[in-house]
Structure formats: structure tokens, C-alpha cells
Image 1 (cartoon, rainbow, N blue to C red):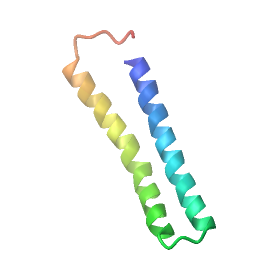
Image 2: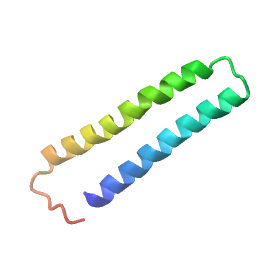
Image 3: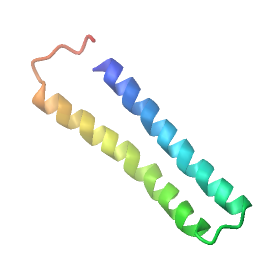
Image 4: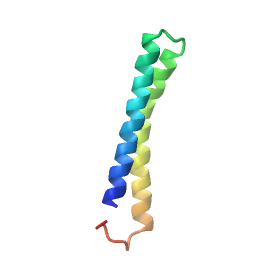
Length: 70
């Protein structure tokens, strides 16, 4: 499970960094949807970690008898 947590955390960080980078790039080039990109990035900042936590919680519930020593 430890390896899975690290992978999920890394994917979450990569996704959030990509969203904020897209927002900054859109702002630099004065794209008309910059505000929508920013709102998406802000919402994803909350949504992505919560979904990772939910995934880990569900995994723990369905795999109670597995060892945590991966």
C-alpha cells in the first residue's frame, strides 16, 4: 500500500502542477478562458487530494486482511 500511496501522491502533484501551469500560460497569452482555467485549478486543488484519500479509504475497507508491508 505504501508504494500505491506514493504513486497516487505523485500523480496528484503532477496533475495539479499541470493545471496551474496551464493557467499561467493562458494568462500570459491573454486567452479568453483564463478565468475558467483558474477556477478549474482551484477546484482541482481540493478535489484531487480528496479523491486520492477516498480511493485509499475504499482500498483499506476492501483489503483489510492484506498486510501494509509492500
